[in-house]
Image (cartoon, rainbow, N blue to C red; front, side, top):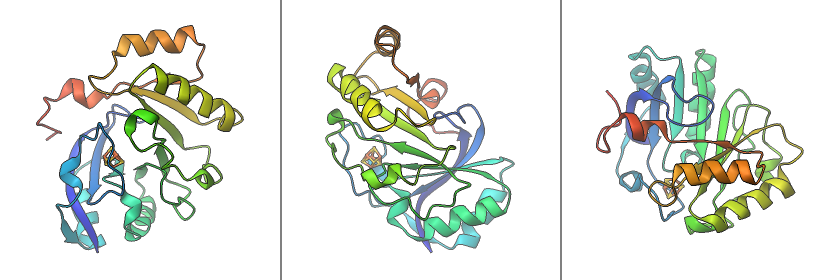
Length: 212
Ligand code: SF4
């Protein structure tokens, strides 16, 4: 059983999968409390569902992509089995995680989107450095940038820890904290290796709506 906050069908707004129709499975519970969190409703609320029930609901949509998100999905060990089952069923599966819990046993077919917390998140140092060892070529590293200090912190982290990796590096402006065009210019001026990521879903849906 997994405690699930919601399952919904929408457009993926982030990562290299942005734009794909996707079924989102949002697990309940998070071990962090980021300053900009927009899913505080997932901290506690949820319903316990069997893996079969979750898979059946996913199958009721016609999507090929499934994104396991939270909260923090890795807080519930059964998330691992769910991801493997979905890969076996032929889905492209992505996992959104803060990297604060070991990713060692995540199925290698899963694309991990690892959100490394910047100082502005209020959760600096939550990232488990050992997770760098478990990254596969599929995985992507994301940094939510809340300020100029965050930008340079992320640049330094990437330079020190990810310069030899071929993984996609994503910088996402913290919604309403920094301007998108400011971050775009910063990436160009500083010759950053990062790709600008805008949260597509925030532009195509009104704030209360996350899809159909
Ligand atoms: S890790 Fe994600 S869900 Fe948890 S507090 Fe931070 S933004 Fe919210």
